[in-house]
Image (cartoon, rainbow, N blue to C red):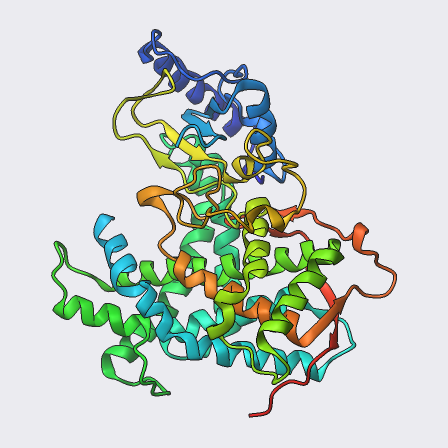
Length: 466
């Protein structure tokens, strides 16, 4: 976890220190001493528990602390009271309605099937052209899911594709970490001197301009390509004109929805495919079984499409097991209590920030046999799915706060994996052994591999012609 501490003079540091002493003293006097908070580690003056979270993988640190202090744990991050839920025991309304009902319904997601199939087929041909040579698998998959999401959202890939991808990756990294300014929200100047605000404002301006141009093109009907299928911007503009909303759907609202969809459709999907392939390479038995299933279902005609995906029971179990061990967002988006409540006998004060560690829940040995083992068979005869009903399995969240893009993301995981397993055998570059494959993580809004995955594709079935 990266803490964005500023580089400042000793004098300024001393003045800031004195200011914080006064702030903490006032808060200490005002605090309700009778509140029964969840247990947690001892807190230092001023910084609370921040020193215990300094590291590159906070979801691992939080799991270890929860093992000591319990599944519901209280931390003080600077001046922010925070409750961490690491167990299933502790389980913009209008915009979510638009996403769930209008944009990302099963019917709407199905209309993008041709886009997914075209983009995945293009990927297969690209890999085939460099067969038997190492490829950057991570980059190939991220470019694929970006292409699918861009065409679904905008109707086409945008001119500034590489710049937009770079900006989105930077945004995911910044939003995924803990900033010192987040921990002392009352000290407004920290967001400026830490450098975070200028970086975010500069990045926001660039992304906003790209999205502004796209929306204006849609308003004027100036898209460079014409598709019978409505893209997501078309749907949002039409909904603004004819939809029955309790508020005005502005261009900024549309931009926010599109950015959320990019998070779910691009980063989440590519991360899941990347980890699934990594786990199968480390477990050749699983790889062989998944390949055998895909090749049996789709035969020898070289055509792999979405019609046969429901028959791939084992591959579906591989995806579920991957998301159990590697949820794309290990720490679900923080929520703030709007009123005081009670959980498991503990009082949770108003304005307490609540963070759910989905990564720890998926590896809890109280609910999972051999929790650290990659074993897809555990899901073969299990009714457990991605809907967030089973609280021991919440890779996309649960309840009303479940990720609305889950139905959009899943086909972007299933179809690429089916195609890649059908058309190629896979091996690591010379000198690397499966059991030694680096599985270290890089923390951000989503948790990807620390190092890109390089693989050698060996053609199995010929790539279908046009």
